Length: 309
Image (cartoon, rainbow, N blue to C red; front, side, top):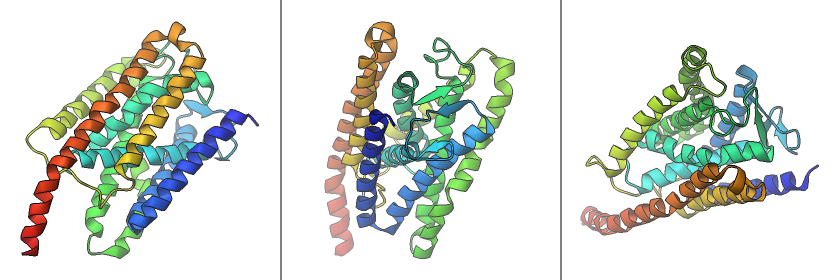
């Protein structure tokens, strides 16, 4: 039993427990959404390893359900819940929100995945560390887009469907199953086409680039375009905005620190620069969300007073 794994897993469990207690204080649905997000994280990790077999986790994880470490499932829940909260705080309309959620989530993976494999948390099969993105295949990043997309899409739809029908909230516990099905829809053709279009180890960058371009264009329009809603989402949030950013900051700092300890500043400076740059982007992102929430407060006050009158 390696102490660093014990510390990591206890840290994740503590953070998730705090998030769950706070979600429960918000209401039953936020709590159910967080639990289902963790279930989804475990399901996708187990399912992906069984179906595609492209990676495996370190046996040093203490708590695991078959092939899926419990800490990974809990981390997935915190990442997805945080992305959804930030998206709502930016005033993104529901029809665009899953695309924005997905890019917020993948910005974390671009920063830490290549460092995590060097730490030994997981291993990509048949991909040398010099292939792909420092040993991480394009298919991983492609999949990350649709992991968050499917769960966000179904969860946000169920939120709307549950208004005035509280019994429907329990259906949230079933969301991981269709969300995993939605994940497989784009992954299967990617897996079939990659050997033809880009058979190199870790290949598939053109398909990933096309997908991220579409997601990026919709995200840019959703955040800065004219078709925006009111920045808020606090009443629907799984976790609070501060916890959302605190979780993202913790992930960035932990893996940047691990990279520095491993000597990646010298051996992989571009990787570390990208990771540091993505951390730095959290500052203007948080500032933008804060500004929009502050700007929306007077409008919300006026609307409330008008309704009350």
